[in-house]
Amino acid sequence: LLSSKSFSPSRYSNIDPDIRFRGAYGTVYKAYLPSEPFEVAVKVIDMPKTIHDPCTLGDIFSEVTIMDEMRCEPRVCHLVDYGVSSGSYYIATSWYRMSLKAWRSAQPPDSLQANMRVYLSIATKLIDAVCRLDDRRGV
Image 1 (tube, rainbow, N blue to C red):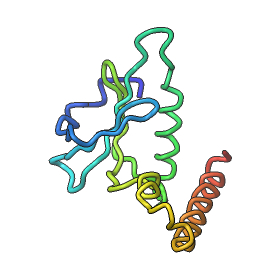
Image 2: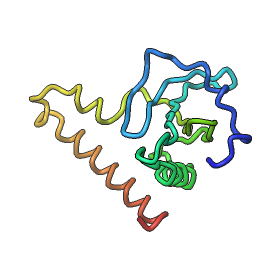
Image 3: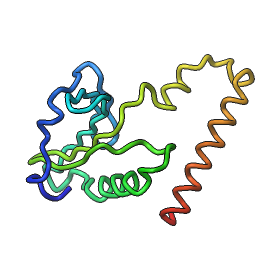
């Protein structure tokens, strides 16, 4: 994340411009890599341009470190690649068809009672994943 010489952002030039999501720090794009048999999500975070822009390097470093340390955990997003170019940071992960937030938003408003077992199962898995993170990182 500190040297642009060891990273090639051109690897992610095959980005689908119609599939992007804006987050707090950057934009996530869906990309197709000819060298890989799967799609990836590429998070592109612009470097601060002025002293008033938030410094995100520490948060990005923490995110990459946690995903790298948890790479053998099936419950954690799979880290494919990461790096820096002259103006942006990149984090590439496996592409997932839908986020939990998007799935929950797609549920009918009156589905709480009917889907209670599913919701409790998801909550149990989330709690288990957080406990595993706590065991491994001491968070």
